Image (tube, rainbow, N blue to C red):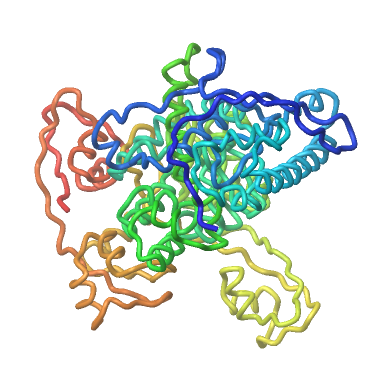
Length: 611
């Protein structure tokens, strides 16, 4: 059934009359009054702000039909407790049908008991509401025959002029738990990361408001891990993570809020490059850009509202249709909280960055910088347990965050390391895999992102024949980090490792290669690399714009590097100059032989690479 949005943006202040008791094994959760649209002053419920700058309003339009959903999610984030469950319809989320209060049970039940009890109570409440709606539908022409509870729900929808309303509401009832406490905690945690995150997004010339998406994705829970395998504050699933960051036996960059922020910026940049619209790009972060593109094509649409109104797909359900509304609500709640904030914000974590030159034990790196275990893990949260425990070493070329002011001591200590603490190769470490029916050595190599030859060598196999039940040793693989990565506080654009810089220099004057992924179009790829579609076609001998997944495309080179001269003025930093010219700090360092230093002086002349 297509989602129907009420044209009314207000929330009705309706008193909840006596409700039918829930048939649960324990005392039922308290049925609360449905809170009015204007809650008491003690509740931090922000009003929808005025658009402010025209640019922001244009980038993130507040479509009138979505405003009821924005109001609903604003209340979920800021008003309803984690121990409250809101019963509502997916078609009219802002019309709250019932609120279940589990705070009395939470005070006397353990977590497992409460979870089981709550699931049953929510299920019972939804079933009862479905039955109630069925009765209202039967009596809709004779409302005087309704009981008090039926009449309450009937009046709640009096502004919706549709005789099929209650028939259509059947099957749309769901429950949503409040997020007030989680949101309050998320806002405190975000103090440490948002200033940096905003710089990363602005460095990519992207709206800083996008950095509020982790409020929706994970409530800024650094340890968030979903049933679907999504991890970190940006909730990357493994398949997407491998495109934008490292995910191997050594590191899981999804758990690193700095690195994953850079990856999320590039992910959203690619979503926007393909879809050309921020509401669509934001929704694509949840649903997938390929799915959004197919949906638009199917309904012959151009906007998010076209998808919500006309796209009928099981995969594009309540979560996908509400994701942009959730984002707008999160932006509103965060802005209102900052305006009312009484206590001082947490200071962002300050650090310096060093680069490993060898395979080094994790514990050795921690010792060299003088950080305790908790701080070192917080600064470098991507490392796997096997690395932390010493089963694997930290490889060369890794950028390590260390406490601010400790870089010099670290470098001195590193130079003095003996051969027992720095190595030329990784420790031997294998995963074990038991062969199942239908598996081949080639399939295992692809699944584990290694080669058939490496598996053969690790297991002493002379051929590629394997048998069911055989236990094979799978050698670990190392992969380079795709794209830019974070290296220092205050840089508007992340830098690259030494090897990545060398590779970039090797490729700068010639063509690059791009492998087509699901959802890619020739136009989106052209926008991403700042070349024309015609140039892409010519470079790849394409007679049309049709491309297929896995196809390798040659991206035309941009010619030899050119430079302009900039004279450093008072108050300028390498970072601010990089922003002014839309280049990275690494580009400036490389062009001026600055090494790892960002020190510059007034009057100094810098060579700035042109694009």
